[in-house]
Image (cartoon, rainbow, N blue to C red; front, side, top):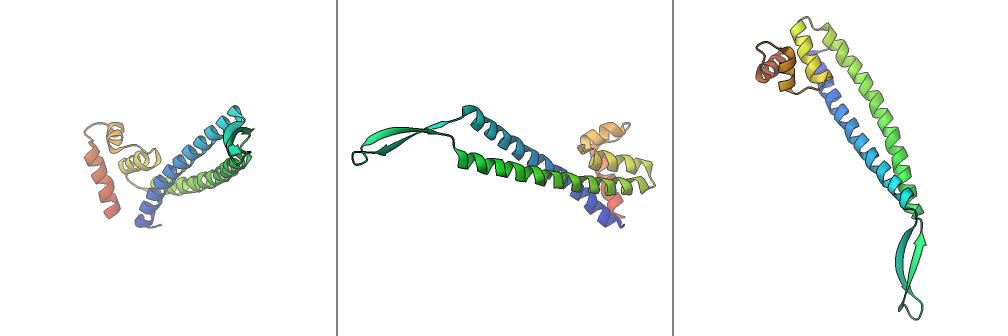
Length: 147
């Protein structure tokens, strides 16, 4: 496994993790919409008709077509989330395997904090302790991938 390929795996893992978060947000939003529809029950709408379209009528009913579409989309997104989470697990295994093979313990810590634990460079520097700065940590990882 080349370092360039490994860098791509680490980047892909970070991006896939964000995609999973986005998918979860969409699912949560759909769940809230479905729950609201179920709690509110029937909807009321006004329609015109009778006497040449001059009379107003109130119509009550449950919006089954809209409800059905939302439920279908919900189940579809849940299935996609499971696939994304599985892909994420595969990538994290590859990333952790690569990181464990890095000779330098300091670099292993940097890579783990940044890519596996998804910390910001400032958080990485704090975890590294001593005289580490966000910029020194970022530069060290950048140089590691340039070699």
